[in-house]
Length: 83
Image 1 (cartoon, rainbow, N blue to C red):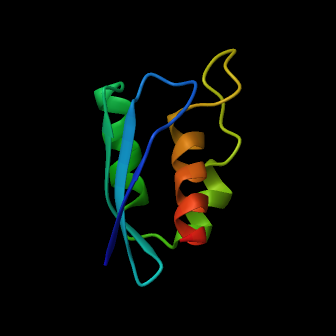
Image 2 (cartoon, rainbow, N blue to C red; image 1 turned 30 degrees about the vertical axis):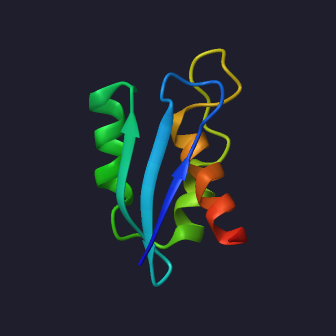
Image 3 (spheres, helix red, strand yellow; image 1 turned 45 degrees about the horizontal axis):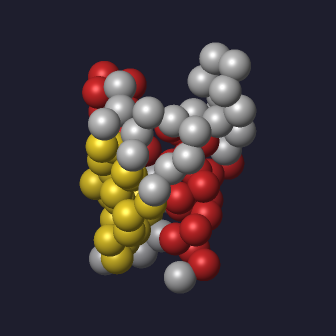
């Protein structure tokens, strides 16, 4: 299991942490974000394949912002695949 930490841009959260275990997303947590929304996202993606989560969340916007916490999680997962 590999632990990753990502510094998101353009959202309230200032850190996203997660594990990847055999290609599956585990233990996602967001720091300083909308607690209910990000906890819900964390629960929904638990145990799902990394590529599936990226495909579902990438490009999600928050209001007029070009990004969102789900979009930033997708970017974090993309980055984790490069390591």
